[in-house]
Image (cartoon, helix red, strand yellow):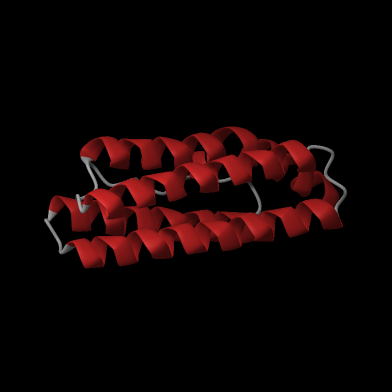
Amino acid sequence: MKDLEWSYVLSVGNDEIDEDHHKLVKLFNMLNHAVMEGEDLNYLAAVLEELINYTAWHFSHEERLMVKYGYQGLNEHRVEHQELIKAVRELQQKVSKAGNSISEDDLVFLERWLTEHILSTDMRLGSFLAEMMG
């Protein structure tokens, strides 16, 4: 599977959020390389855990900005964050229980999860923050 490439297409127009997203893309690519290179399952689990933990931190970062600037879509955005974390934790449990590696389908799921959230929900937030912080 190809690496995710950071580009202006993924920029939401807010430096803080873009920096977080750039780090998420790097962590995703690290996981992708580890899977493709057949790394040890313990290493894959560690990279996946780091990706999940950083994602959770990033979500709380976004939510703090939404609260600070009175973002109307806060509740819907927060629910989406909770659903995304739940889905990736379920993937993590599936992988650890089965003692299996992360499949290419799992990577496709994670890539879609990351990019679709950025390109839809986070773009709306970025536009709002640009107006408020402008």
